[in-house]
Length: 60
View 1 (cartoon, rainbow, N blue to C red):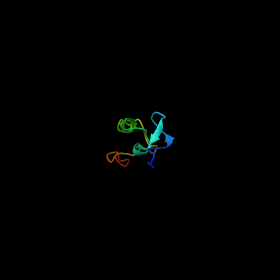
View 2 (view 1 turned 120 degrees about the horizontal axis):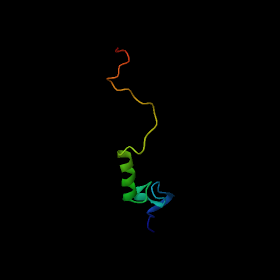
View 3 (view 1 turned 90 degrees about the horizontal axis):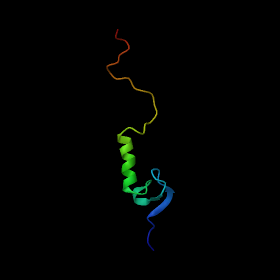
């Protein structure tokens, strides 16, 4: 018996069935598209905006 290369679930990029090698994606293409969205800041993790070290509130 051979081990199945497909697993349950849908690719978050295209909706096709996922492939174990690229989980949670279906292919290297969808994996790379997702990575590109992170690099281009299309995805953002919500949180409070940090102040830079040059923005001191005590300076007048």
